[in-house]
Image (cartoon, rainbow, N blue to C red; front, side, top):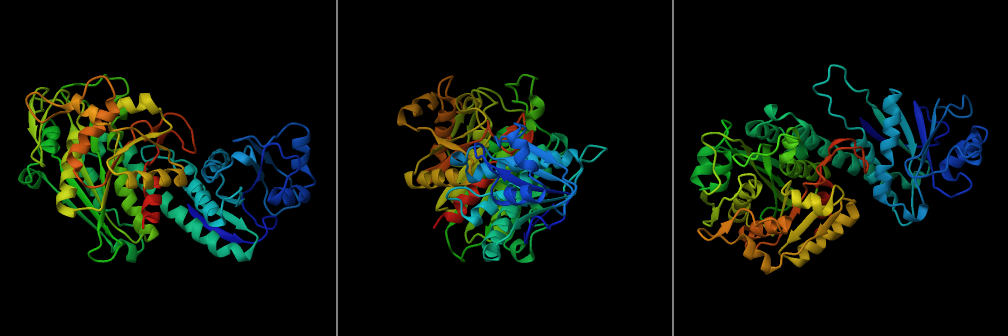
Length: 501
């Protein structure tokens, strides 16, 4: 889908459908909606007067005016209360528009750009374009009848003086949205078609489709079992032992900063399918365990977004890719693993595998890149879903300055993160009697003890952990996403990388 700026009058612009907006509780249609209302004989005002439309959040009114404007359809989209309107709600407001366009099999949409108190035009444009890109996503690779897709989404700006910032914002939002959708395709892919080697092939193709200058700043390396064994990555080797598909370590560099400038490391869990291993999961819902590599897909997508945006940072994504399967060669509860860092881990559950591969990837990033900051993301614990549901990701870290920057990025991007404590007392739960650590800490504070486990491998490097177990997949249409993968935490991380000084 092409996302474009048109400077002009929405009344004269021809598309399959034009979109204007209205805030709840405001008695008269204003802005673009007011102009359209006057041109089509007061139809919007009549609908409001008769109670057919109130402007509530997510509410829509579809009109076929017949004359007065160049386009055959007008959609009025409700934005809710003006005082509560935010840039991220602007993004979410595009989903009902795209749903109606899909049902009507429309190919082109032209929309006014809604504003709100304190939302700059460039910011509004970025979130609007992001909403169009994310709301238009549908994974239909395996469907005989493909989904009807909008081919062109145009945002209409009547003021030529704002064309520059609006165009910049639209380009930014489109670049982020394209990268997120690239990653969503990976998460949605059936597990038989995306095993560790498949994820590695996708990573090698990461620069494809980017501008030559941006693609040239990306370098992808994939390491196999021989290198993983040579580096003594006991966690990755143990988790991958049960599968016939050998593990991979994917390293994607984006060199957007000056030569010699410090790296930011992004570590993503890449379990392409998780049965739980010998500690076998229940069968209900196991088909969704293809999404257990959402953290890895998100980190690779962030590299793509950083290149598309031209972010002036050196960023490296490290993704350990494994398949966690039960077999005669699988690792067992009771095993003790020696990790790349030299620490030993007693395995109590083979279904707590993500922290084992992340720990080796963190140690690798620290040793190889000596990053100034490090962030990991993983669908790590069911406990995080219990604590924060499907709205907010869990966040922990060892550096207050980095945590503060991530909180700011969360607020600005709209991807919600909530900090959980890493008090020293939690370490007692993961101390082992026969090794250095246990890979689970018991029934209490499961998200925190998993984070504390990773903290032991981050050392003195400023580090933040994001548990995305509850937010990486939507069961129902919500918060501007259709059911399926969401692409978190790409929005948060691109915001952080764009602002970090």
